[in-house]
Image (cartoon, rainbow, N blue to C red):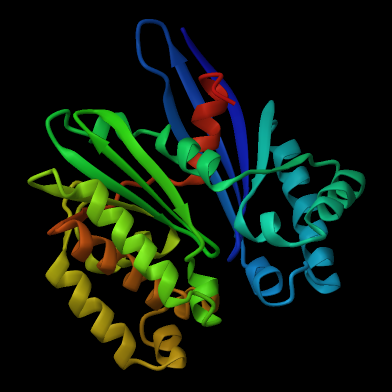
Length: 296
């Protein structure tokens, strides 16, 4: 006997907003299956407001409300029985973040929770990582967002340490990540990985998924440091317009992909990792699984 549950997750990031709808297939004696039913991504760059002006602009607030009303209707037609909506870095820092949450609840009837970097990292880490982590290996999990990057170190199947830094793609585009932050990241990575002989990177976020797709590799194969370095040089050699016209990148991906690649490359360099694995996971997948297993 098969039972299907429909859950949804809304991830309000600094570069885009996503609605993920998942069919959870339950069968007696088997592990539940999480099958993506629909994913809608809206390119509203809240970080541009939050990090430069300090508040979400009137225009973006309106776009957010429209997006949330659309998400609400989509969840209704999909017959979603349970959902959660989380906002990250941009909403954390916008001084009108709480007002935005109140307004969206009133206009779109969607309840949003603003979460800190630690909770964000924990939710992402609660995804399917256990299938990927070999117990005798050491992994540095790197999730690059628009406003922040979360680093989580796993060794022997256990979470060793986790830290969130205010170094995200939208911030880097606006030249808002000073050398001190880079130094802190370097120090944190080196200090936490120095005792391990070999560290393997796991990357998550829209940009690394795009880089992986462009590589044409099959899902289980990693990207090497050499490949990442040459891709970084190649992307830098193209203009913003060329990245859109020749590589087919979305306008809101074509600029942030370069600073994102830089973050992953630095993480590989400072941890001594030669390879980066790219499983299909992110905050929205984490929200659905954490809801299902009663962790949030």
